[in-house]
Length: 293
Image (cartoon, rainbow, N blue to C red; front, top):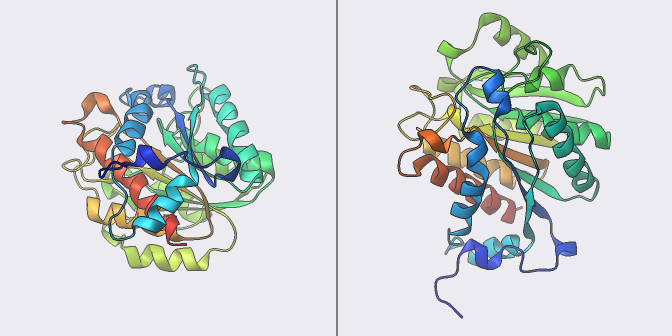
């Protein structure tokens, strides 16, 4: 046996029928284009998966971490055809089946339009859910010329006719990037906290308050651009990578968290794969947290 085993050596080791976590790739960025952002996020999922596969399990928590990995599957790529609405429905259909089976989906986006497809998985399953978003932006814009995009997913979820969005909470907002109207709208649906207010203790307390399933989405542009330069919308005043990774761990550890997505990595603007590697480490931390449930 090799003395240098990596994630890729453990993921998928058990029969698929025993898996508890499915990692799915959703290579979309047409919603970023519609929203006037920098396309390129569609290149991220396969790079994040590859970087994740190259990481080693936690040496101190080796048995728990590797047990979790053996219950995890790389479950493939959801085809995206630059029709945001159809792509989101395709993702939702894949997620709905997994949610019904009690499998926790981890979605590698893609632009943040990923998250409405993510939410639709709950709506298709008729499962009410609370959404927690770590993001520099509220992403509650209206549709543009009737088209969904990377800035509209949570308005769409809040107003969806299924009523499955119980609440929408966003943490890490950049005060210079959030309009008053969007801030007020978001607060009417749940909590809205700015980046300087965000702590691990705050997240822990809110997770304990929420009853029922929780959908997590983490947008890499919540991070300071010095630590995450390869994103769709660079953030000069974002949170630290240490806090970001601690949050990913807490989300993994919370038994009410039933799905997770990570969005807005843009490899076209990355530096030495810095942001891709940090995204992979985010999933590493989430899976470590899950192993501690």
